[in-house]
Image 1: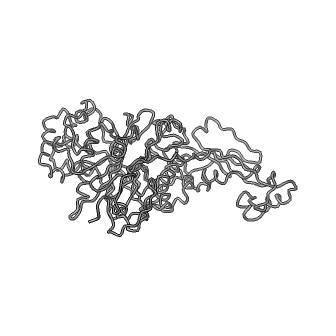
Image 2: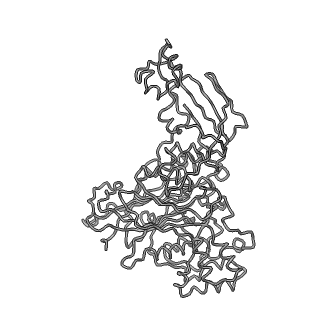
Image 3: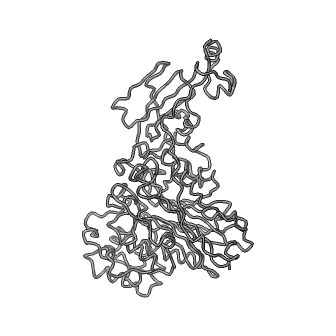
Length: 587
């Protein structure tokens, strides 16, 4: 048997690593021997490299790889440090940060009488038996009592999170037509990409609980418990999406699409957004990935800026962020939703209902409120064009990590469709906006910001901006360029259009605010920052938010280990869950 602490290794070898069972498989089967030949080995550890052994946590590493992408695998070399029936090994300082694996092969066991499986048969061999005929003969000739002993698990699997309480208007009177409407549940979750989950940013989190094999399993467990019809993820890392998340959710009945950020320094080591949906509930009718970098460049070209202004404009806006738009059709015979209502619902006999689910992750740096506002404006305008069809306007549900609190201009724009021209986010201190003060394109950065928004991604790159088409659609958009010419001392003014043009046509309401009367106290809870950054928005003219799941209280988080991530909660963000139903009848 083998036992290990999961982590990552960059050590290479010409031969593949030995096949190991996952920690959780060992927890289920446990160690069934009390004597044998233990062998211990250690391997180099680097939290920013991949772990081929992590594939055993999810099954075959090549199964169900999305979009035909090959998993990013790094082989590693193990060094035997002790071997023999009485072997022991004392770790030294040189082993700090390395992994220790223990392998135990049963040869002869004694203890409680063993009846099933019978020693020597095939089943017994598969459980703990000798690996060769000589060992088997030695076991059969052993005259003492034969049996198996079970050892305790070294690192037990965390218990499931406490069930969330749902709040909504389930007691509201509904007529028979409403009872036949399609109900669906949506989850949004920033899962904290491995490239940002470092001890430098989260020194309070136990090292093993930061490693992806541990957190990844917990994340999948949370998603399974949520049982959402549509899942929107942010900071999903490309290699982990392909190798771990997508195959695991595929087994739970989900399909998915992934949109990664523009930059990529190490193959697979770039995060992005992902949308998953239940195959029995929805069919994906259409999908679009919005690249904000492209939109920014198109706008800079349309505004015919000087070379100097265009450079300042793009430095401020090219941050590699992305968004996703997905149109889903609900199957007529889709199974009804269950809790919080628990009321059986008949399958609708009308034409399939359609909904557009949008997912995004905005730039995280707190010193760039103008960039985030610009991204939000571009996102809303692009989404408005996407859902406006010749014969219909699709219902909209928006999910994401907006890296903006309820007091921000981003929140005002989404909730009211406009921004107060005197809002502080439109007039940040000049010291944070000068492009001559060391501001560099985000693609040169590789770490999370330390500016308080502890849930964002430092490398967060983004694309977003008002496109050339949007510029032409606004009669006052020429003020955008004039401001850039008149206020050269504040390059940030080149980014945003005239305040009268910071508007959109989407009718949006926050699901949590609609159900609870206020946003949650926090969705991001770290040692340095606690606040609400994540939201689920919806069109109240087309869909009704019937309920939301309450997030864990601060007392619950403290009891689980304190600031996030911890051993119980695998991300620095909390998942949001909301249930919706369509209004009216399909056209």
